[in-house]
Every structure is written in C-alpha cells, then in structure tokens.
Length: 401
Image (cartoon, rainbow, N blue to C red; front, side, top):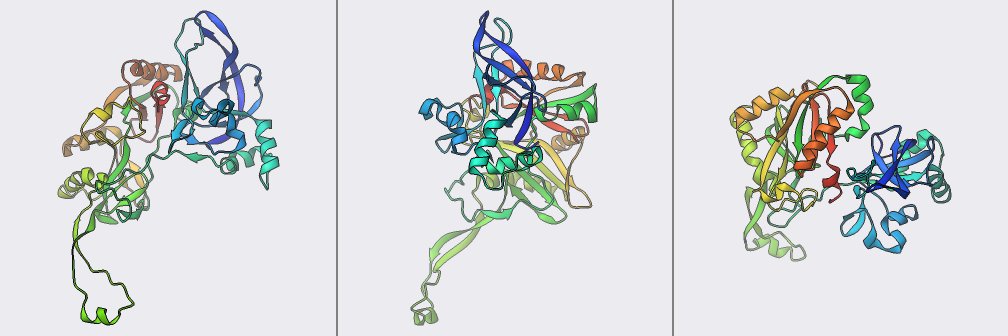
C-alpha cells in the first residue's frame, strides 16, 4: 500500500477515562487498512473520505503539517519522533484512555487529514494537481514530500563512511522491510484464508544485514539495508618520496601515501565476515543470510527500551534466501531455514508461536499478550512456506521511539 492514500471512515468508537466517557476525542477505524487513530469527535463522520499517512514515514516542514510539528507553535509538544533533532517521524502515540470503562490504553497510529483540507492545500501550492483518487494514491506522497524513515547508516570504527561501500545492493536481491500487517488483513482473508498456520518470531530492533554467496558473486558479499560493503579497504601505512619525474612536474600533486589492503573495520563487515567465511567454507554457493545486527552501541531505532542494547554486538538471522534461475532472491521455507541455520551454527530470532489461527482477532490477541511481558519492537508472522510474511508492531514500544 502507498504511504499516503485516500481512506474511508469505517467506524467511530467512544473513549473512556476511567469509567467516564471522553468529551472531545474518539477512535477512528478505517475501511481500507487496519490502523486505528485518535481524532477530534467533530472532525469526521462515518463514510467521510480522508488522507491517511502511515507510521514510520516522515513529514516535511510544510504548512499542512504545522499542527503536528509545532502544536500551538511549540515544537517540544510534538507527538512526532525526532529525526536529526527535529520532529518528523510518524509513530504510535499512546493515550491513557480506553475503548471501554477502565480498560487498556489505546494508541493512535499514523496521521489522518480531511480530504478537503489536503485538496485545498494542493490546489494552492502544487502545480499539476489532479483531485482524482488514482492521482492522489500514486502521487500525493511525493507532492507532500513524505519520505520513508531510514535508520542512520552506522559509522565504522574509524569514524569513516566514505570509501567503505562497494556500491548499490546486489542485483536481484530485495531489501528486507516487512509490510505492516494492518495493510494485509484483506490479503490474509481472501488470498490465504482462515484457518491458517502462522509462525511468529521476535522482531529484533537492530540494523538489517545481508550476507551471501551467489553464482554471480562467488566471492561473497555483505550489505547493510541499502549498500554493499567493501570487504577490504586501503589503509595508509606510510609516505614515500617523490620520484625524479614527479619532481619535474612541479605543478602536479601526486599521492605520496603508501597503502596496505586491510579488512574493512565497518561494523557490518566486522561482525558479518565470520558468517561469510562459514558459507564459503561449507561450499554454500547459493545462500543469502538475512538478519539483524544489534547489541552494544548499535542502536537500531534508538529506542532506550531496546533489550538488545544490553547484549554484546551480535547477529540474529530471521531468514535464508536462494537465487532462482532468473537471479532473483527467494525465501526458503521456515523449517528448512531453521535446519540450515542450526547446522551452520547461526543464531536465529526467537520463535514466539507456531500455531493455527482462525481470525484476525485471535492473532492480535496472541501478539498483544506476548507484548505485555516482553518489551520488543514487534513480531514477524509468516506462513510455513515463507511466501507470506508481515510485521505486527508493539505499539507501546513504537510510541517510545
């Protein structure tokens, strides 16, 4: 689903503070997606159209988002998460109110704007504006300068970023970024069907790492979420004197440094290289490891509640891929992934459940009960064949990012 889309108000649910009903705000349910939001009671009616922006995206500093960035002119009161010190990131917001008297707290997930308000802004500020559903769903996120939140690329031990990367992500490999399950309930119901057996594993809050050996890259590779890393780099080990002909070319500035090829001290290479060595040693010529690099000073989303921050730096695998005849990466089935990871001695993410579910409500109850005693980022659910997967976010954790 697009990060910005037109949605329909499906339902309005009253909120309670203790056993008294709240006067001014309520929960809004949307027809097209499973996200819920808290909004002013007078703002929407059932059947109204609105523009919805998903969590984990960042808003731009334009008048349309002024009330979210600076409520009543005060940036410190913003409910948005900070990016480079500025409130920009859409995240879950916790409210100490409940859907029933004395119930559990609710969370507002995303940003909702009246469609007319967005249309008026675009008519006055954006050239080529078309108020059609198709145009909005496919172009509005660009017009409003909405961007996907990306975790900052960790700096290497030497403090350098430049010269550490080989280039772009290898061709044919997808970047790991699970879809939020709130966008996929219809897919589960209509394409997969209940009852369905799902495996749930902990979603580790770290930095995505990909390590692999493929027929096209037999020497192997290590990647962050977006970039392929150099396995070795040139390190300055001394200086040399100018050669006689360089002295004659006095207007030139030759490189007089002496270099030695050394292993890249980038965190991804430092912790990923032992995994790559095991793949090469075992003759795994068509395997791609997918995991999370976390622990120590590797901060992931930056959440202070991240349990991984108390661990030593490590990698936990959540999947293994192979490339097909078209050089495209495909996930291997879950049981095969576990068997191969165990055989090679790799640590995998913790399994939370492996069971049959008969409804959306059963799955959410299972996940939320686990979140009550485990402060983790979320749970990734997948079918046994690994052809379907999605993330169920822990909104309590997300609200603290």
